[in-house]
Amino acid sequence: MLKKLCLFLKSWRGFWRFDRAFDKERRVTFYSEGADYAGFLRPIVNELIENHAQPVSFVTSDPEDPFLKLEHPCLRSYFVGYGSARIFFFLTLRTNVLALTMTDLEKLHIRRSRYPVQYAYIFHSMVSTHMIYTKGAFDNYDSILCVGPHQIKEIRAWEELNALGPKKLFDHGYGPLDYLLEAGETENREEFGDLVTVLIAPSWSAEGLLETGAETLVEILLTAGFRVVIRPHPRTKELTPHVVAALADKFREHPYCSMDFDTSGFGSFHAADVMISDWSGAALEFALGLGKPVLFLDVPRKINNPDYELLHHEPVEVTLRTQLGDVLDLQHLDEAPTRIRTLCAQPERRKNNHAICEKYIFNIGRSAMRGAEILLELADQDELAQTLDPDTNNALD
Image (cartoon, rainbow, N blue to C red; front, top):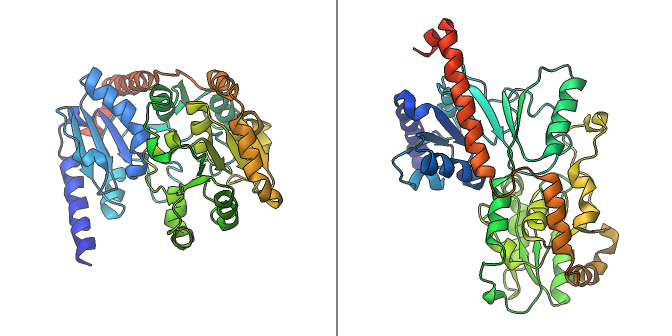
């Protein structure tokens, strides 16, 4: 109870600090739901404060967010929690541009500000926009920083289908992918030795791999002599913690099985030789960023938008499954060890995966620079609009 009270008071202090900040400090603002999303925003934030000397405000709902501990003369960080302080933050927000990775603006409890603000969405996955995401997930954003051409095509098709006005769509790219491509194989794998390491990194859904039971698969892999690392999705940890706890308890004492709960980093990606996934966007990061194979389990599609087929665009996470690895039916889990050994014995796959990357992803290696350019452009446009519209200026007084 005392902890909740302390966080409540801390969130309101953060709100008042932000609300009273100088306008120049709030010209570009980022909002993060928590530490798990820091890696998607960090590349652009760093580019703005290091190479553009642009003052940035970073607002987070997570008291453990690493940005709260980061000190830089151009960075101001604020904690607003998940409750009433966050609601007031969004309703009274005054900034030129707000960049965030949270979908469904205006559809749940997060509303647009009463003041004019440019809302810019930054993707935290490379997947398509119309199947895994909820219906209309991006309808209320002004600008969207797209990962690749597939997202632009899908969003434009959705706008046409639903008679929506066109949003500003930008060729951005994907920061975590750039990190993985740059890091390559430089990470230390010594602790894993010569054993083939299998990373199990599924998505979250009612019919996902972990939610429906992964014990049989893990036992098969361990019996076959593989080292297994299980990386639950943050939403799985949040929505079905008992499932994760049961799996951890089951294999806690096994010397070749471990859990990775740090989804803000990529240590287990570098350590693994192959990934097992279902419909997770992490599979695309693993395959395209490191050139490593993925064994996809054929669980039911993760469909959060029942109208996705009306677009007549096959989701990229469907298209790429057989190109980035192999697909295994749940009725044949005993074949997993053989499939994994076959995938690991294909040295040409790395070159193939990088070629796919070039086709599907914008600005490889420079997404942070492009993202900073976009946000500064949006901030400049907002200032010009305020100059031309006296009513807007009055609203910001």
